[in-house]
Image 1: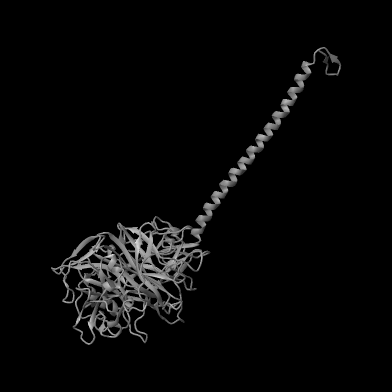
Image 2: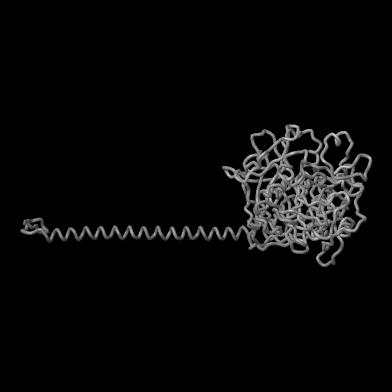
Length: 596
């Protein structure tokens, strides 16, 4: 083997020079590796510093958001520390927000540093104390991340509990956090708003059926009735989650044939144990209106368990006079036994109500009837599907015209009613006219309770004693009769019945009671109101008499207990003079309860 010296002369063996060259090459590679490792290390350090600083900045920014009060957390409760929904909080510069169903409002007021913010506190049926100038409000500290609690006093008999349809039921609660829980999702089945409700207990669940339903993604939603269910064991004192019947895409599905071009609405939803077959059946009355909102088609429908919708059956004559009493009616199954005690049927089970008896106009019978109330029960039919689907089996509570004492349940005769031979009596308390509502048997007293609305205001007080006692709206006061509480509410400026050129407006709900479904009913008084005197936002602004609409009040007897009666209705700016539309709440269902 040839070797070379360092001088370049050839040698016999070249291994020494080769080793030397390899050593130098290895040293260069090692140096490059060290540089690469150093570079990676430096980059890693910079990355750690960068991401750490980002997290720190985010945390600091978050704390800064609280410190500079981008959101100011406020919670409104009543004198019993129950949260109050739909309370209007407004600033001196007319920034307006409302509390959610948990009484929370996260006021978005960015940029306020170490200052106080005055909030007007205003909502119908509740009052915040007025100062010397008559302003009802308070200055709150903006430098807080702890919820500011404001206390209002309930001035109406019924408690406003929560909204249970639409978007953002507990939106502010979920945004604010602070350990207050609300399991209701912000958006459920893409529903933004829902009209009046009917309910029935069927197959172990409460079924709810709503009118026209607003959709999140488009102005037009579902106009063929919307359905949902809940367990019968829900807690009615707080918002609950509706399990909607939905279609592909997640929006609610129509409960009736959606091929019909005009709205199809549901009335008289009722679950009954069929008197012939013994099968539990869920039925309703459907009506389709034309472009002028006149009824063009109507008839009975039965629930299809497989399709999870109503199957429309025969069609009835749209000109039939009985439609007046069935469209919009609420339904229940009652029986009066030979001993005079009333029974209510729920899921093929009989509940006997003690202590109340039928009047002479109702013959004792062991046959259960479906009674339709609008607002009083003047139509009935035997609780069997073959009877429901045939108008000849329907009965009306009618009087021989001109003979007020000659009133009885009679087989429906369209001609007799149309020609004035018979008159279906108005069962409203003397001197007033009540419209739109529902009747059910109160579980403790056995009285038939009607929740309804005024058509006029010719009478405002009741002279008969109330069957109820109710804890006063003041938590420290002793119990008093419901009638007396209503009167004190009215006299105390709580927004009681007030006559006007247009009569009473659809912003109130009233209660009346009877020992019989056919009356006589006694007015118990006003339960709630959405009429109010608006809060002036400056000394230059005069108070304004405003009314927001609350219509189609509906009792929910399955939710009742020994202490409380529950009802709900539609909150809407329609038919009102208050065009300050209430965000989230408008065109949705509000739940109330009354301590009985």
